[in-house]
Amino acid sequence: NAGVTQTPKFRILKIGQSMTLQCTQDMNHNYMYWYRQDPGMGLKLIYYSVGAGITDKGEVPNGYNVSRSTTEDFPLRLELAAPSQTSVYFCASSYGIGGKSPLHFGNGTRLTVT
Amino acid sequence: QKEVEQNSGPLSVPEGAIASLNCTYSDRGSQSFFWYRQYSGKSPELIMFIYSNGDKEDGRFTAQLNKASQYVSLLIRDSQPSDSATYLCAVRVYGQNFVFGPGTRLSVLP
Image 1 (cartoon, rainbow over the protein chains, first blue to last red):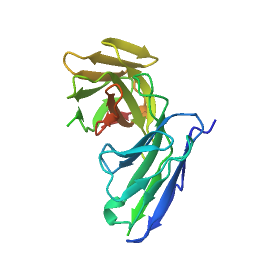
Image 2 (image 1 turned 180 degrees about the vertical axis):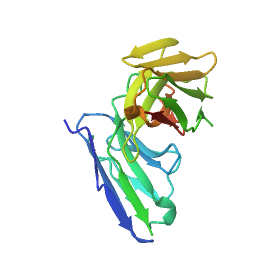
Image 3 (image 1 turned 180 degrees about the horizontal axis):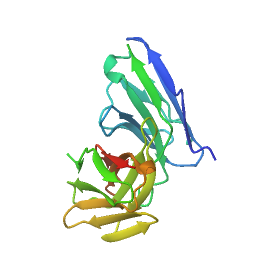
C-alpha cells in the first residue's frame, strides 16, 4: 500500500522555467491537496480538489495550476518559475470532509528556483 | 481569517519528562483537531486527532481539548530523544479545509 506518492523528490529550476509536480494516491480518497512549506513556517494550502474534475484555490494559488482528471492523480503545474516558489511541496489526501478524516501526506518535493 | 497559533519554541525537556505542547484556534466552529509530528526534512505524520472535549490517550500521547477556551494540547509522557521534532496542530471546520499552526519545535535532551 503506497499511500500518497510524489515525484520528483528534488528539483532545481531556473527562473522562468516550468514544471509539473506529480502526485498519485492509491487509497481511493476523494479529497486531495497541495501545500507548500517554507522554512520555519506552517503549511499553506495552494489548491485542493474534492473529486475528479473539481478543483479550487487555496490560500496561495498564484503562479500555480492544477487538474484532476482521475481520482488517483492530482498534478501541480508551475508556470514561469520564480525564486519565491522555492519551497517544499507536499501533496496530501483525505477520505472525506468529516472530523475523522485526517490528511495523509506524500514525502514531499523540494524545489529550488535560481 | 481563521488562525491557529502555537508557540514556535524550541521547547526543551529532559529525557523521561512530560512535554506539553499547546495550540489555540480562533474559529469557534472548529470541530476536529489533529496533531502531526514532522521530523526535519520529512513529511508530517499523524499522531492523533480529537473532536470531543476532554482527554484522549494513545500510548505515551494524550490530546486534551477545551472548546470553551478554544485550546488543544498534546502531552508526551516519558519523552525520548526520538520525540525531537516539530509538532503541527491542525484544525478543521466540518466541510472546510484544514488550517495548520506554524508548529512547535521540541527538543528532548538525553
